[in-house]
Structure formats: structure tokens, C-alpha cells
Image (cartoon, rainbow, N blue to C red; front, side, top):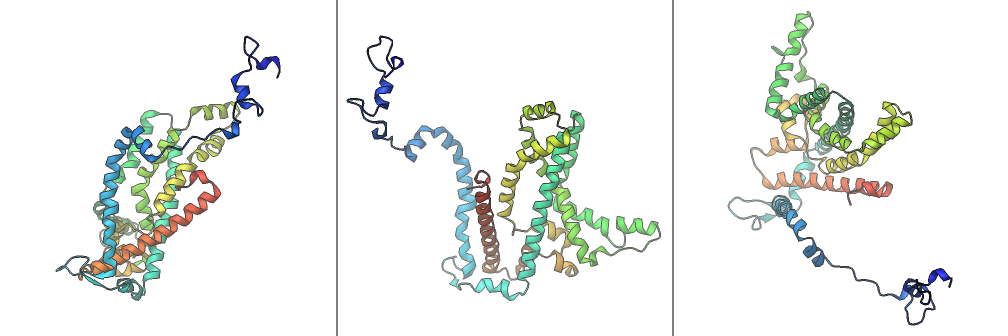
Length: 341
């Protein structure tokens, strides 16, 4: 030992060196020191009881609205009789699922539902990120607030009102579009007999209605980015596009991945209000606008077969569950920090 390893009096080694020294008399080696036992959940619950108490309303909410209703899945495997109870109804196995399979439209319905929701997610998030960045770069406060309000306003418009707007725009006789075409001595267009056009119209109206809400989420994430990053980039000579590309977009990656995973869980749950209000019972548009939700509603609104309706819901849920587990597994392999679990 060197003199530095002794205390101020110079006659006694420091205790830390005795413990660290493998040959120190009367002391255990560092490796032989007993490890502390991990504290259990009960200790954590008592220590942070206030925080767990704050979680209680959310736990009760999801328990009542999400977990207890899962018992209703059993409807998909029985022929429910309103004169008896759920568990006393006749068990029919997978008979209710044949309703979807025998319809011959399961592939088309799945493709339409998946395709529309994929477009809503991808295009919607891209536009929301772009608009959030543009709004965040505005330096005039009143203009920034006005822009946010105008973009957020359509979110509060109901789908019923939206259907009225769309009808008055594309009605063959008195619609705005055909009125303008007649004014310029052009032939009117019957939009309600052109299925392919409604693929784009439905996506456009959905984005118009929900863009402001999605933008606010990304705008909040941009607000949370420290200004020090941008100031350092300015000092290094980065222009506005470089600051967006190398600072803003990477910082929004975690928010984008999180929203993507949440959206994928319900990718087979169609926007029933949107499709039914815009298209209604127009059979000419079913090939390109019919989704699982509208098909099940039209098929069962007369017979009201609980088992068949639940079977369609179970099919949607299982499809979404498999998809989100697969995507989450891939994301966890690429970057574990962005995965949900």
C-alpha cells in the first residue's frame, strides 16, 4: 500500500481498501458480499400508494369497458336466443363464421377495410407531420393560433353533416360540381355511379376531417423539443430544411411509431359512420367502398343475429392482434426503444 491509502493519522488503512483488498484480514471479498433481495410488488404498492391510487380510475374504466365485455366473445360460438341467457344458448362452434366465408366477399371486404385504413394511417400521419412542422415554423403568434383553429375545426363536424356537404357537392341535378360544369357548358358527371372515384373521395374527406386532430399531437411533440438543438444547428450554419431533416424529424420518430402501433391494432375496424353516411345503400359503389362493418350491418339489420355479428367482430380483432404483434416484434428487433412491449 502507498501512503495515500492511509487515513489522516497515517497508521490505519482506509476501510474501502480493506474491503477491496482480496487478502484483507477479517473482511469478506467484494464478490462474497450478500446481494440485496429485490423488493416485491407489495412493497412497491405501499411505497408508491398515492401514484397507484391515481391509476385506479383508469384501471376501473378499462376493466368495465374493455375486459368485462370480453365475455361477449362467446356470442360468436352460439346461436343466441333472446328467450334465454347467453350461456344457455345452443353452442354451434364455428358455424357463425361461415356467414362471412360463404358470402364470397370476405377477401374483398378484408382488402377494402385494410386498404382504406392503411391509407388513412400512412397518408394521414405524413400530412399531419408536414402540417405540424409548417405551423411550428410560423413566427406570428396570432396567425399560428388561427391556422391551428381552422385546421382543427372539421374534427368537430359530425359525419351526418359531412354527408350533407358531400351530397350537395356531387348531386347530379343540383350539386355544386355539376352546376359549375353546366355553367361552363360542360356535361354533368354522375359521381354516384363511378365506384373508383369514391376511393379517392373517401380518403380525401377522412383526411380533411381528422388532419387537424392528428396535427395537434405532432405539434405538441415538436413543442417539447429543446430549443438548444436548433440554436446549436444555427451556429453550425444549418438552414431551416437541414434543421427539420436532422433535428425535428428524428425527434418525431418515437411519436410516429407509437401512433402507428396504436392505429394498427384497429386497422380492421372500419370507419362505419364515414362509409355508411357517404355511400349509404348505393349498390353501385359496394365493390370499392364496402367494408366489413357496413356489410355486417346491412346483412344483419333485419335478422339481428348476435352470433354472426360477434363472429365478424372477433375476426377483426384477431386480425388486428396478429398484425400488431408482428409489427411490434419487427420494431423491437430493429430498435427496442420504440416497441410497445
